[in-house]
Amino acid sequence: MKTKSIALAVVLLSTSAYGQSNRGTYFCVTEWTAGGEYKSQIKRWNSVLFNPGSKFILNIRQVKVRSKPAEIAKPDEFDLYRINITEAGSDYSYPCPGKAPGKAFDFNLAEINKIITCSVLLSEYRFNIDNHRFLQFHGGEFLEGRDSNDSETPFIAGGTCTKIE
Image 1 (tube, rainbow, N blue to C red):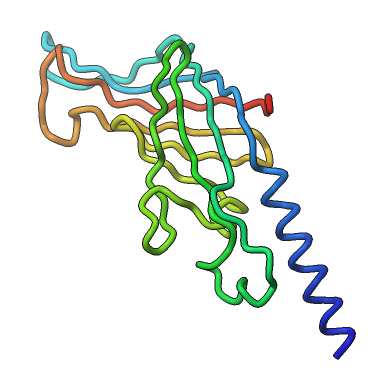
Image 2: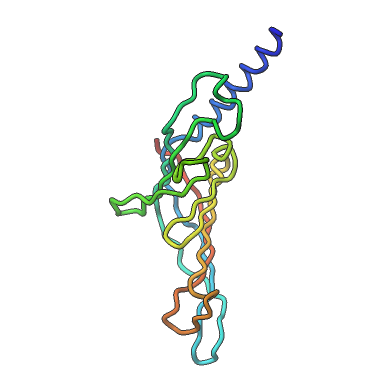
């Protein structure tokens, strides 16, 4: 029994420490971008490289702590985190919709320990905090069938995030 208690304590402490190490603020910079653009002269979409340069802040903060091991019996009962993205030069922070039951903008610890998926501003972001990389997908109006020079351009971008806090 004593061995089981020690093993449970080690698992809980290591899981909690892992989540805490991923909490914080990250400065993210897009390093490459590619997508498609519509050419009305030939009436088709072509691939194109864009100049990267998008910068934003990724903030992961804990909003609820479960301190008793008995409360951490199910994955949906882990500590809860809130994730926001703020574009460089902006004062407004966009919340990432979470998946914690009953919590529209909260993520549980199990989700923080994996690749984080966040849909914000018509884009989907995927973050791997362990290796400090992210991908951004933006469908534009391509899937809607809008073929014109003023169509919103679909693209994929990638970059890195540096922990600043």
